[in-house]
Length: 217
Image: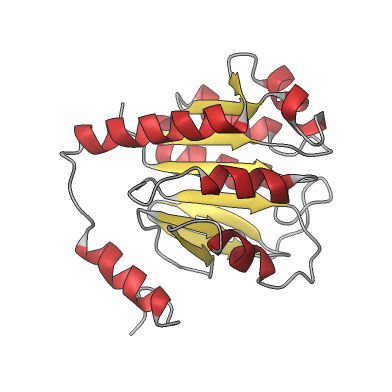
């Protein structure tokens, strides 16, 4: 089956988990992947910089109305909800959900509604239950649900909550999750004809390298 987007949610211990996950994705990985990490509302762009040093893929902190492009890792900005519409991001300053902004549930719900069975949800380490309901939404729409094995998580509460809410989720180590994402990416590329980077992606990547907003003038 071809997939269109991956959304990853994490909280306590997420820095190490994301570092391991993005470090295992190859340079030709194409599925747009959205990373939602709970962090302080005054956090700066250090998370994007930290992850960029560990991957050959382009890492970008999301700006409002930014287009969703293949082959990129998108980081949810601090103190905003990140919503996914078809092919574009939206940022919101609505009230925190379960004390969180960004809320993993909010992002996962929007991904499920926009992409249906073409969405993949991934829950990693964390000390609360944010993301479990959103993962359920993705699973109910026919998408793929992946959860870090709680026994391998720095904080098992979030993956354990996700498993309780989505018993049909696949429970894997981070290395196994990376392998699954690569396998899904390969299948998706094969089903889509293994097309090379789109012209839109090339334009967006070039803009990011030059420090300009993708899709801008």
